[in-house]
Length: 258
Image (tube, rainbow, N blue to C red; front, side, top):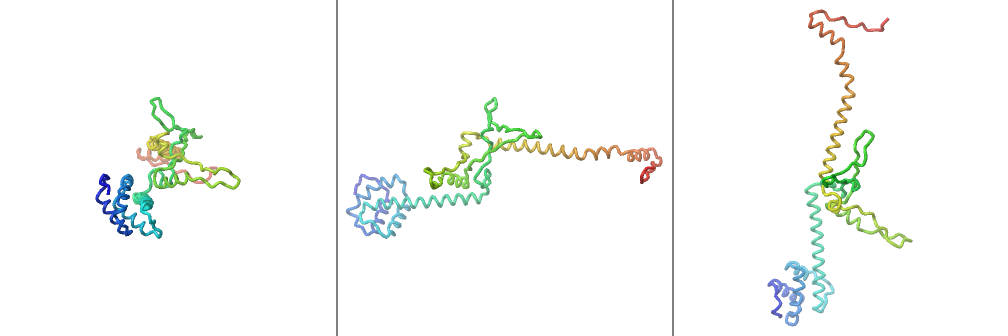
């Protein structure tokens, strides 16, 4: 054993476990295990991972006879263990998001509607704002939006789908690449980081315009009836007769005038 190679106590216990499981004599191969430790340390392995890797390695039908090959098989098992663990953690994160609720940015669609990059302008003080694209017939401002890929689990799936390349069709030399939407993090870093506040502000101003227009439309449709009610001559005559304590004027006779 090379005493100049520092290693933790658990690594010695794991080495005894591994050698005992494979029924290998310790004396001639201890130096090999000591040489492996710096590599395992760089991988930041844990005692649990090493023991699990040994058990999975032992379950293989064709275990290598040479001790030097054990290192490669252990590294392969460690990679497989960590890949499965990361996949489980990713699934758990998605389940946790589902428990919390729907993504507030994309509504779990994977895409977020943001102010169109072509309509982002700057004020004199250098601050950015969302400029209207044009005005409608009624003079209302029209704003254009664009879709970017969200940062939530659903957005990550959309991103993975976008990064795939279609299989080339017969007769075509190169594969057909899908059109990729801009990622939300890239939009915030390169285009407009204050898009959420600006989107809410524009929505508020548009709602104010809609509410004002609806009130004006209501006033126009009811103004005629209100005016006729105010200047009804029969009601005015009845009020005057009541104040003067005189008989009210006779009601007009129904029928056609001769």
